[in-house]
Amino acid sequence: MTAIAARAAPPRASRVRHLTERTRAERRLAYLLVAPALIVMLAVTAYPIIDTMTLSLQRADLRFPDANTWVGLDNYKAVLTAHVWWADVLHTTIITVIAVGIQFVLGMLLALAMHRTLVARGLLRSIGLVPYGIVAVVAAYSWNLAWSLGNGGWIPHVLGLTSDPLSSTFGSYVAIIITEIWKNTPFMALLLLAGLALVPDELHEAAKVDGASAWQRFYRITLPLMKPAILVALLFRTLDEFRIFDVIYIFNQGALGTESISMLNYSTLLDRLNLGLGSAVSVLLFLLVSLIAFVFIKGFGAAAAPGGAR
Amino acid sequence: MSVGAATSQAGVSRRARTRRSGFKSEHAKQTTGWSAALVVVIVCSLVPVFWILMLSLKTPGSVTDGSFIPHHWTLSNYSAIFKAGVFTDALRNSIGIGLIATALAVVLASSAAYAIARLDFPGKTAILAVSLAVAMFPQISLVGPLYNLWRQIGLYDTWPGLIIPYMTFALPLSIYVLSAFFREIPWELEQAAQVDGATPFQAFRKVIAPLAMPGIVTTFIIVFIICWNDFVFAISLTSTTNAQTVPAAIAQFPGVSQFQVPYGDIAAAAVVVTVPVMLLVLLFQRRIVAGLTAGAVKG
View 1: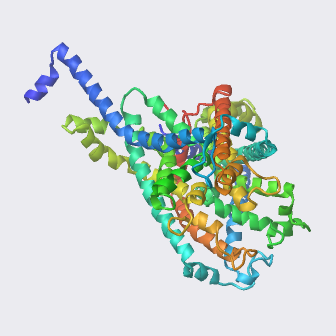
View 2: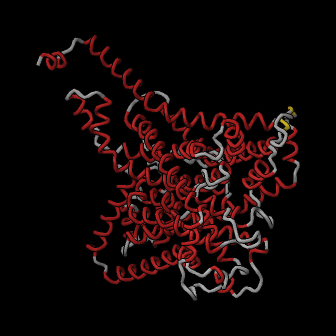
View 3: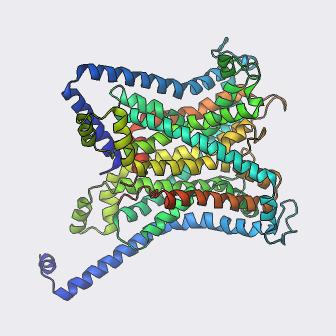
């Protein structure tokens, strides 16, 4: 009773101090709650990042662990003058652009279907999500065997091909890109679905009354209003696609001119055990990924703050 | 309002309105169109899954015979992989590592997300920026140094050796998804609890945590799928059945000879690892959609 009375009519000065104390306690609690996650993220990424940068300036080979010497930017010079690096940048870019482009179109269609469909909505969402849940390695094997003529795949059968598509560069690219599209379109659709939900129905109804066609309504109302969601979806998928590794690993380990930057990075580090060169590739890959993110965020104004909805 | 909730509510109201407006013929045409779309989606999504399922049911000699449906049905591939130790060990590793990494990530992310969603403190943006940077980081770039470090300190080819990177890379998404969920919780209840004399921590544990369970479960599922699917770390940081997870084990299944890949075994193992995730996705489809979309869009 006395406590309530005291709280109801505190002197002015003490109320100010009370608020500050509260704020301070709140901040203390906040830092306490955030610290573990932040420390883990920084500790697990910071050490390897620093290590990578240091190693990229050394001649370092795991087979001769005690023979590291500083070589300045020699590793970068070696990577950037190597044909294989630029070829792999090209391969990765081709796969990324085509796969993300098609994922965007199909993902948009899937999102529209998930958003609007009048029939079996739950079923559509469940089945549409199946590729998302499949282990990437499994998806890669399924499509690899489906394309392989030698292993009795169904696709060459259906298309009436007489030579194995996986023995040609073009066929391998088609197969790898289709696998990526199949696996990742659902995630693209989910990101776009979130944006679709933000488009008010009233605008569509009004435009309909004004005689706008379905395409006009989509192009003039839905797309512009969805721009933030579209940019975030494209950013996420582009960054992920640019790091493509597992599907190529399963298909042909980068043979036939399908080697991606991540594949090169892996083979330099773990097959050839050349930590110096491999680390230089890592740093360059990281710079490329940062560049892509920068272009999306600054150039196109992608509000890449998922969950930052305030 | 959470985007996920908005999605489903908008959907319901639109359906109701379409029915009420009663453009019968247009409605029928639309229904046909969407049914066709549904069939296309189902076929495209499921054909590769059926294909690998059918492969797993073929006899080892006829795996590559080119027919979609097996001529002779058999479960011998399944009994083979469960008899050989490699796959069962990998399954045990996948489940154990996945569950532990997910649990740790969700616990750490829950407390961080609570602070981000609920408390006012300087540096919030910095934390979200760090998370985003970690999420965008090319994981392959960490593999070299981690491989090196893990070998030095004895974590190479152990459970913690995979749990640590999995937990780290699951944190950003967990923080985003959870803070999106946490913003939807009726916080008046927390204040009410505090007025009744609960400390902030008690209010968190006794009032908010139960309300937050759906979001936490959803995050758990999403994160578990990510850990379950990982290949980059699994193939680089393990070498034996000690810690090798299923994706890495499948990719390195020993064949009868160097030139014969054991596709029947691979297909059977693929089906076994796919089933639990498929069940999760089918059962929690609505939650996963809500979770991933809520975490993804700046409203």
